[in-house]
Image (cartoon, rainbow, N blue to C red; front, side, top):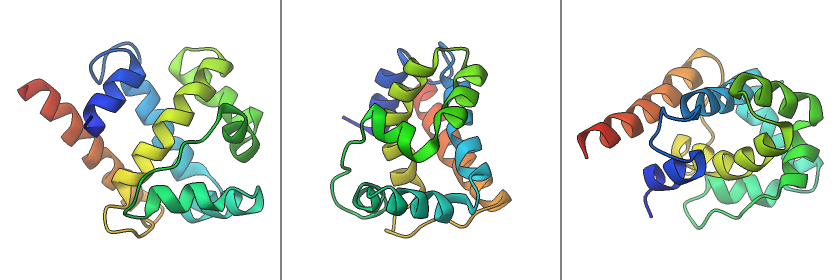
Length: 140
């Protein structure tokens, strides 16, 4: 299953439908606004004993899954609630979507096994990845 198929399945339809764009944008907000950016997020995973998960997403091997509880422990309930509000879904549903989206988005942002830089460059990288996914779906 391709990343596009996985994201579409996770979002309940084609990218951009059913709040999919809001969720993907919300994931990029989390990555950009986490203290220290993606590197800071990786550090949060380490501090919560989950560094191996983030490493699997950045690395070139298989992506390990993350549970809803693990998402909450790393991001915190407040960050999950902010994501939920932006996407127009419940915090529980948001946690579930984040558990599916984070590994895929981090993986796509690190195709050579390296963390992307933070700041506006990360946002442009993320939007480039996402726009590529959206354009593929409209061509199919």
